Image 1 (tube, each protein chain N blue to C red):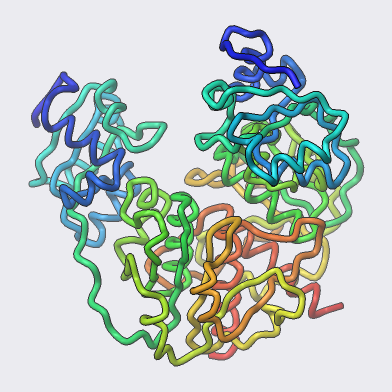
Image 2 (spheres, rainbow over the protein chains, first blue to last red; image 1 turned 90 degrees about the vertical axis):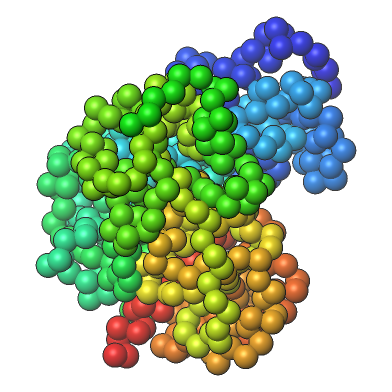
Length: 262
Length: 262
């Protein structure tokens, strides 16, 4: 275990750059996993860790100590709490993080099963939450348009809680091209009266779900791909949901209908 | 319109304190609404604004300019962008905010309709999202245990997108006392196998929903209040949802069942 005490140390500078900048992550081809839960999820699926970084405070915690045992063979860098906070990608440093390679893009195959397409979702928490929800709902492929936040950003990874390790995440996609031959309905959610009620829509089949950015909604280009528009029936004075909440309602209504029909 | 240029100005110091500290908000009995969408929602329901604060950048935006017209009669404080960023409660200053009084707690009445109880939900984004979802699902009362984040914190207000103005939000509640005479089932969500499938649970009746903190779940004290435990059936390798996503799935399954039965 190496110990370092200066911000000017090259390893510390590299970690700080990875924590703070999508450009630096792309340049180095690396990103950071933050926190014991996410590292445990990575180890469970055998995801290769290049280096584990631990703080004084982290070393004293039982769950992190046992994590280090499970990650035997992975180089460990030990930092004082103050330096760990400096390289941590989150506001409340957890005490442990790991460096991983940015994965190669998944192969481009014909999409036959339910898929989620996210258009311009910039908020890292929303993006990670939707990835987590999609994985929990049994979705295998998530497509992101170029306007989305970086899927492998540390904050998205943290909100994803391990979803990244089980999904195929396609970034920077051309939505029209990827959905051109999709065998099922392409469904957008809308506020528009006249759209079909979600609960009266047949979802027991493969669906391409389109979810847009908070506020703006879908870009005109992506909205034009929808073959159906559904509305989540609101009961109160609030007429829209957070995009992560809307995705959860839609994807689990599909789970419900699939259970009923199987 | 008053203009100010120094951080040492007492009005600027007060705004900065309100933006950053729950204690300062309680001390002054005030909080901040951030962004044109939230201010519009407040004006729509006639919520009293004490003061509107606008930046140079904000003044140049058409939606904010028309907001200032609608808020005629409310004192306006004009700040240079740099000072506005200093007093803004969010990372990306929107250009406009308002000071409001912290509202008096809603009256303690017998709860007869569906209610959401949040236990130890500290994450401001999750808390605001759940309030928004509850309001959209037609829930009128939300109860928060003392371990939750401050419901009227600027970041919770922002994520709530106006839900605060239509809900009765009861903070610092004694959960056992408030739910003692609740007429319907008190339902917790669980990962435990053996819990009943959400979709096989009768929700076309008043329900008291219990949602706990991300990670920890419900405190033992609150978990003990549950008369039923339901599980959201997960389809993939990810075995839990973000608490905001879980609440959306549960509350809108109840909406669906209510539509079907009505």
